[in-house]
Structures are given as structure tokens and as C-alpha cells.
Amino acid sequence: MRVYGVVGWKNAGKTGLMERLVTEITGRGFSVSTVKHAHHSFDVDHPGKDSHRHRVAGAREVLLASRNRFALMHELHGEDEPTLDALLAKLTPVDLVLVEGYKRDGHAKVEAHRAETGNALIAPEDPTIKAIASDTPMTLDRPVFDLNDTSTIADFILAEVGL
Image 1 (tube, one colour):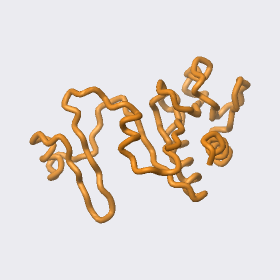
Image 2: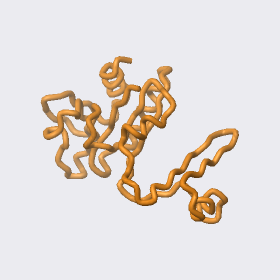
Image 3: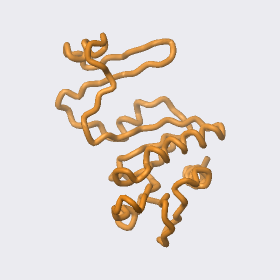
């Protein structure tokens, strides 16, 4: 499976860029899945619901299914966090998987950057970052795109992965 990442510091515009890229790339006829890394505890379940009650009771996995979708929740119970590769292996094959986060993994990435955050770029120290999507012009040793020029960023990513 082809994998390409979007990384950046908090409030850099990663999620908005991911959303726009999914819309743009699927609009061109490609199938896309996403992986989002969270640095904090999160829950997609709601206390009191049957699936939550199953998890609290000790179920290792709870699969919630309907005619519109299914969601598989897996409790780690102290196990190590799965690697990106292990998680990618769980996905149904698609043309492209866009990954938000996992900035230290070895796949190719574009860095989202907003000047107002005051954060330094990750790219100068990371050769896996192949381009920057920024709200401010800059000169670097790799392409810099306007953060809101989704079509051009999508062109770049699709060319990078051979689609």
C-alpha cells in the first residue's frame, strides 16, 4: 500500500490539510484511507452504551457493526502501542493511506506549518519530509507549497507515490 504522511506541530494545520487532501484525492477517483496518531488517551465509545459496557467488563476487542459501518475497538491492557506498520496491516487495501502524525516513522511526509504558532520547522532535521505546506513563503532545500493550495499538494503527493 502507498503511504504518505502529514506532520507538524500542534495547530499547524495538519487535520485541515488531511481533510482537504482526502476530498481532493478521492475526487480524482482514488481510494484513500487515513491513520491518525493521538498522543493522548481517547475514546470513541460512550459510557452506558452496550459496547462501552462490554469493554469495561474486560473484552479485549469489541466490534460494533451496523449496515452503514463497523468499528473495531481493541484494548491494549498495558501492551506496547502498535507500530504504524502493524496498524497499516489491519487496513483494507486502498490506493493511498494518508497518515497524520507518526512524524518519527520512516515514510515520506509533507510538513504543515503556520507561522503564527511560532514553532520551528521539523523539516531541516528530517529527510523524510519531502515538502512543506506553509501559510508563509520560505526558501528551503525542498518544495514549499501554500498550505491552502490543496490541488498542488495533492499533485505532489500523488506523483511521489506513483499514482
